[in-house]
Amino acid sequence: MTGTKVEVATFAGGCFWGILNTTVGYTGGKESATNPDYKTVCTGSTDHAEGLRIEFNPDTVSYAELVEFFYRIHDPTTVNSQGHNVGTQYRSVIFYHSPEQFETAKRVTAEVQRQHFDPIGQKIVTEFAPAGPWWNAEEYHQEYLFKNPDGKKCPTHRLHW
Image (tube, rainbow, N blue to C red; front, side):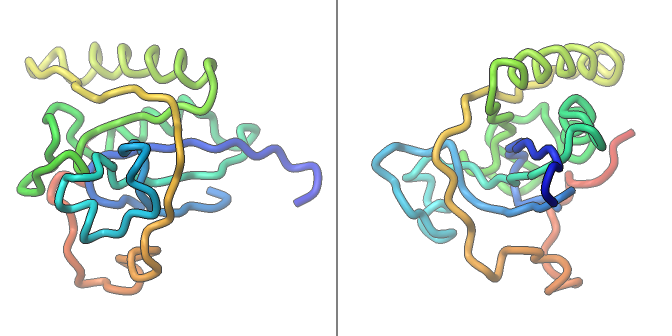
């Protein structure tokens, strides 16, 4: 892949969701909460969100397209929850890796709000935060639904438009 552009995007929309490479893991937690595991994150004591780290080629797919798709596949209108899954680990967050990503995320969020949520009287509550330390989730969570086709799925994770 020499010469191929690679950028990183990090999103958290509650539960791990599954162009170059993706990894599920934990981010956005307390500085003192290093190397968190699923059981600890689920207690809410670390403040980490369950997220997806995407390595992508911006010549193939734009960051704006990833942000819009992020909104299409989860419910960004609930604070700290996705369906029956409740807790800070299920919050909707865009962790930006550059000022350009932050500006794009804000712009796309405003567009999605206007086009898809204003008409139904709902408000996007997705947070924006600078990307910080990333901790890979346990191996059994990586490509979870491929390994467990009948595994637990978040009810809000589907194409909404």
